[in-house]
Image 1 (cartoon, rainbow, N blue to C red):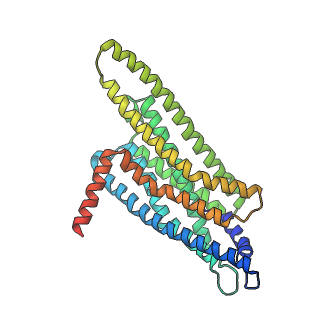
Image 2: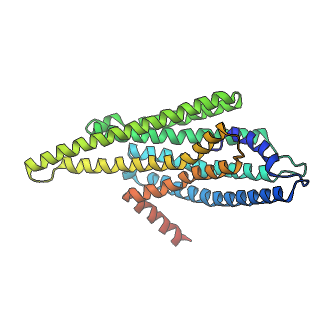
Image 3: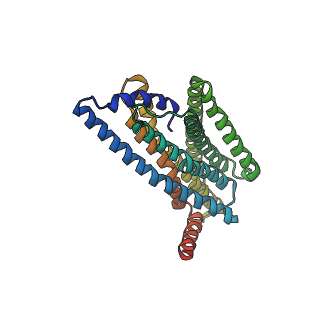
Amino acid sequence: MLFSNETNAATSQYEDIVPDGNGSGGAQHVSDAMKKAVVINCTVNIVLALASIIGNTLVLHSVWKTPTLRSPSMFLLCGLALSDLAVGAVVQLLFIANDLITLYPPQSGRPIRLPLFLNIYNTLGFSLCGISLCTVAAISVDRLIAIQKSLQYPSIVTIPRVRRLLVAIWTICIILASTQLWHQQSLIILMGTVICVCLSISTISHVKIYKTVRHHRNAIQIQLQAVGRNSGTANSMSGLKKSAFNAFIVYLVLIICYCPYLVVYVTSSFISINDFLARSIASTIVFTNSTLNPFLYCWRLREMREVVLHTCRKLVCWK
């Protein structure tokens, strides 16, 4: 999101894109255009951050107040909602401050760089990125277990185990992100490994889910032809298929939102370009994932949608 090597690049890029007053009119025009673009991007981030805070807070409140929603799979969604809430409430605000400080430095013409501010910003950005990826991978594995071992699922996946898993994910990702405080190269290697592992786990899980569902569908069709009526197995599999598809949508939206940043990052690593604005916009697309997730939950989960709408009505009537 938003990552520390971007900070160093922004410092040198700033000197190229923002003239000291002695440059040509064309350079000043480019600088003004970039400033306007960054200001617009920051404004968009303010709107996205507010939507993320409200949406994810409503999701967490709905699960907290509704006992029927407190299942292991829903707790995993709450873990993702909590990381998205932290993105909107903290990381996006630090991102806005970082961009504005870069483009609007003091009169000396050099941007302000506060080590403590940057360390907090980078550590939170890296850790929450890792937490989101790991949680989505955990959700994918959870749905795979539910479909492949539906009878043993309640004993395998329990709320206490999910809680311990989420605590472990948060702890490990924060520790890994903290390595940027003393060794930047190690951080890049570690985070690259985490990204590859999480995406591989999610992709393999969804491929296996698809194959398992297809196999069960064929078996159920044979059963229906023999029995001549619908069965509880067919209804149960239909619910599992729907939950697996919901998990796939969350995974797919995450991939779509993260891809632009990865493209910009890889491109700038091999080609020497001024990528400050491109990274800024790509980071905004990453942040959009935190805003979209609550809407996905409400769209795909009827009970959560009803609780969220009821909470919103109560808030409106109370006002």
